[in-house]
Length: 423
Image 1: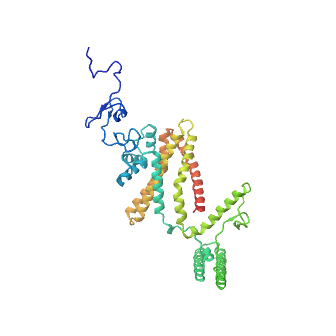
Image 2: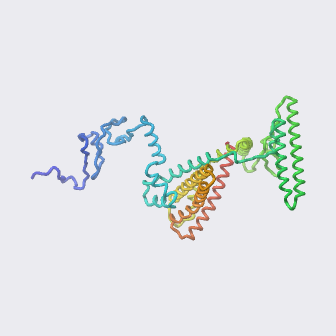
Image 3: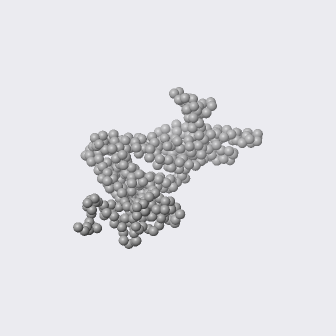
């Protein structure tokens, strides 16, 4: 009995996968060991793409798409137009495509939505939480650092100390007169007080005499050094430790921690010496410390992220959620905070540029609304993700927030001290 060639044989199951080759291009013969024979990976109703006509530069296999099926090498290398390379980099690192437009609005306006979508398995349609946090953290602190005006931030300013660091007699006299003028202004305000005016006046007179003596002593040091052909002595602000309040010195008055070994105390005093040397640099240019501090804050947040996730894990022990689920919550919440910080800084900058009037008032109200939205957003996000009652959510939100603010304060302080040393 003749058989139909198109019918499945007894050895072939009717449900076995079949190969469908696109007909818009000539299909090469599928000989054993050939490119097409090796590329038969399509199953069911999937169609094998038409060959592109090009071959892999690495293994010479026929290409059926942007990657070689045999060795995995991409068809496009770096030798191409720079614009396409920039586009690929943006897509790989930041996922700047339609996913970004689907992500930004929920991140800002819908607390917990992205996290719930991620837990539900709908991940590919949105930007990943890690990339969101990385992008907004770096961008927010960069813009904040760029918008900072160091001229309006008098850090470590002291006219009395200007007398001790002045290197010429006219500089000493200018510093003395400035300090005396400020004391005179303070004395005028104190005289208007109903009580204690006489005592305050005596204190001001005593301080004025001390400033004059300090100026005379510095002038004497400068003139004596000039008479001997030497530069004036330099007075450096020194840190003080201990009950005797003596200035720190690496040899005469070092800092010693009893339970630390000798090499550790030596390293600690070296760091103190570096910090002391940087104090005068910071006094001359406050932006040095601010720039270093702002550049280190994103890494501080990266360190605190696992601790924040751990706090959530401890507060919700009966939810039976994995630690990484709490970590996703931490990533989305911190990405929102960085995005809100970025918007607040931008609105503040626009408000400074705007002329006084309705526009500036509106920008100020918008900035205040964003700041107020931050804690409300986090509270609603915690309620939506963990699905507990309002009372329990509020209690746990307060507990987690208090603990995290404490950790954040410690982290900022440590970052400040590290940057003071390694400035």
